[in-house]
Picture (spheres, rainbow, N blue to C red):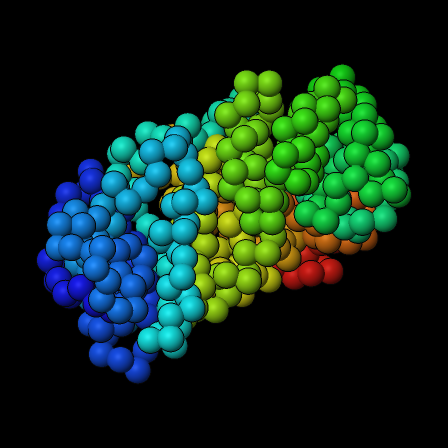
Length: 411
């Protein structure tokens, strides 16, 4: 691309003035030329020389390659390249993850990480509640949260959904949620479901147990705040949004609207379309950072290499992005889900620490004693991990956990 010169600076010019991205690049070209192509395409370059581009524009607004280490290139973008509109994720993504994926000069390219300067971070408000706020609502200051996903994903009536939630809470769970495909279907209308679940939660609280259930409000962008307001008025204590399918703006709209007074549980369904290929697409890490910026209070991060989500491997970076102190926002509650059952709870906590929400669907509903038995087994597994007692030892005095270990085993 015309008008660009590769620059190896070795460090960011000014971390307060640049967005810094790391890309994994696969190309038949020399890595320097491939890096140039990305920097040019995503800022001031084009495929040929043009009369309207001068050196001043390139020097002021052009992206610059500042490091190449193996197949990882680091590119800095001047913050001036980004919109002055408050918190514009669409425009941010257009710059850092736009046309580069289609460049003919590249066989593959993957956005691995992004770091934002203060002037862009300040455009976002972050979570209203965050992990500490969710813990306050549940009166659970230290132990990991332990939850379930109502199963089957679809098919239960509002009454059966509420019964599931009640049984899960009676078994000791702190959280439950709709699955990502359930919003407002004829077999389970969202108003009827929300009211029935709210009654179940009120019943649990009257019995001395606090629990949150996230109602899925994933819908079209111009309707999501309206739907969330209705769901909240029907008694919802938490909302859920599918961030990839709805867009980051949906989370942001809910988090920044003063009428929304409950936490937002963020599901990452469809992320595998971007994240699963280790050489091409977008890693989960940039998506996690953007979710925290936009105001998600809880976010699914897989099972840290322990459960069924193969793409997670043993990568703790998303956990760190949820809980780290390097950004001016409340911490996000990391949610570990995906093939979770009592026998792997200890392994998850060992990797995650205590500030985590561990969530099981089939690992609750598939228990030999049903949903309540499965909830008890999950709660017992969390209690064992919190106390530092091996599951096999703890199971000797806890029948539900023993049955779960007998059925599914442990790690």
